[in-house]
Length: 269
Ligand code: NAD
Image (cartoon, rainbow, N blue to C red; front, side, top):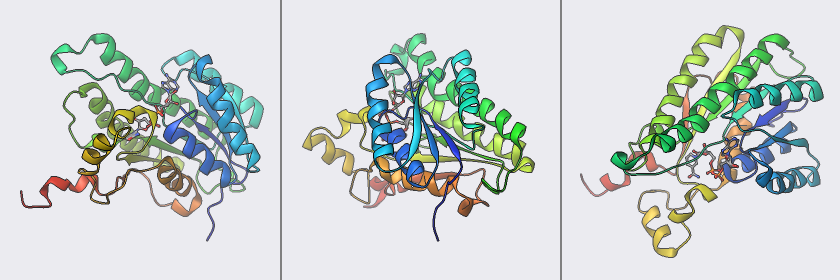
């Protein structure tokens, strides 16, 4: 049994670092041509480095600058991808940010920034992807499905997170966005799922793992007793995007070392 994404084109948002870069590499290793999206001029170098790893390993792709919270830029990213590669088969809605604050101190800018990237960005990219899937229709030389969307959500889709109300609200909303799209476009054979990572070692949560003390207290939340790596998410994303997962749609899959079993209950409760 082999995971194959041959002849398929994948857009991976926020692919210049962390989980997005791990997913981009996994999809490319399975044969997909990958659009390594990055948000600004500043992240071009990182995106190019990820693309180089992909091409050095025999894969294909391009880098593409686009702020996913901006409608005109998202529309153009999909138009340019279709002009260059013919279509889009897979969207990985990964770009995400945190702007943490105690709730009563949270500014509207902090709220809007997080909702803008984490939720509106996923809406805009999913809309353009689905339009393209429907335009192309099913092409079984590519995939049994008409298209695949994977939202990168979080364990905070279900675990409340004090001090991070904007982030938790964005991830909770992604669950309903994902399930609604799976319901609305199921008959069109478009599959839509979420991956909910636990603690993955990336720049977004550096404070939680960069000192031995911080890492130790993080591990107290993870029964499996290790921090996750971007590859852990990339492995599942490649499988979920492939035809091996053809009957999986409308669901959230947690990749979290059992964090959502609530470790603090292991000694009673
Ligand atoms: P990261 O900071 O390494 O990656 C986030 C990426 O999103 C970066 O490449 C960043 O440039 C990009 N980005 C930010 N704003 C953007 C915009 N407007 N347009 C396009 N790209 C933009 O962090 P990460 O941990 O790799 O996070 C990736 C996703 O995984 C996020 O959605 C995050 O919420 C989610 N997640 C991460 C963890 C974790 O433990 N690291 C856990 C659960 C969920």
